[in-house]
Image 1 (tube, rainbow over the protein chains, first blue to last red):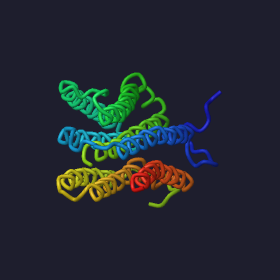
Image 2 (image 1 turned 90 degrees about the vertical axis):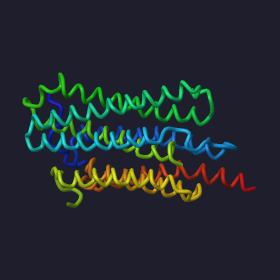
Image 3 (image 1 turned 180 degrees about the vertical axis):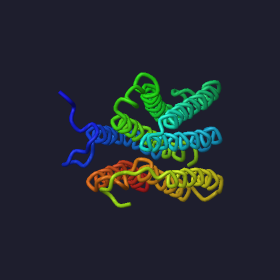
Image 4 (image 1 turned 135 degrees about the horizontal axis):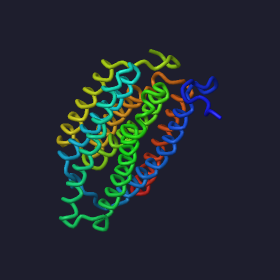
Length: 194
Length: 98
C-alpha cells in the first residue's frame, strides 16, 4: 500500500503529511527548549550573583554567523531542487554539512577552553545551565547533520527516482535545521551577551 | 505573496534575509558592548533575537506562505513560550521586592 500525501497536499490540512509531521515535532521541541529557557530564567533571577561576559563572545558570534550561513545554504538546496538543479542542490547540502561541522569544531575549542580553566558543569549554576542548553542544542545539530548526510549519501537515489518527494523531504529536513538555527539565535544573546 | 499560496523559491529574498540576519548579529554584539544597564541590554538583545527568529521562521521556513491555521498555531506557541519566560521572572522579581 502506498503512503498517501507524500507529494500532494492533504485537502484538509493544506500540507503534505511529512511537513505536518515535522511541524508537530517542532512544536514539541519548542516545549523542550521552552522548559530549559524557563529553568535558565529561574536560576538566573534566583541567584545572588550571575557572571556576565564569562564566555567567549567572538567565538559564539562567529558560530552565529556560521549557523545563519548554514540556514541560507539549506534553503538554497531546497530552492535548487525546486528548479531541478540537482548538482547545485547537492553542493548546497554539502555546504550546510560543512557549516555544521565548523560549528562543532568551534564549540569543541570553546568547551576545551572552559574545561581547562576548571569551568565544568559542576563549577557553578551558570556553567551547569550553559552546558545543558548548549549541549542539548549541539545534539540537535548533530541529528540534523546525520539527516543531511543521509540525503547526500544513500538517500540521494530518490533525487532522480522521485524528485518531488525528495524535494519535500529536503524541505522537511530544512524546517528542522532552521529550527536549530532559531534556537541558537536566542541562546547567543541569552548566554553570551546579557 | 500571501498565506495559502504554493511556496515558490525566491532567491533574492533569501539573500536579503541572510544579509539582514548577519547585520542584526553585528548590531547585537555592538550594543552589548555599550553600558546600557542590565534591563535595557536584556530587552534590546531579546528584541533583536525575536526579529531575527521571525525572519528565519517567516522566510526560510516559509511560514508566511503556509496555511493560516499553521501560522496561528505557531504564534500561539510563541506566546506560550513568552509566558514560560516572563511568568517565573515576574514571580521571582515580585518575591524579591517584598
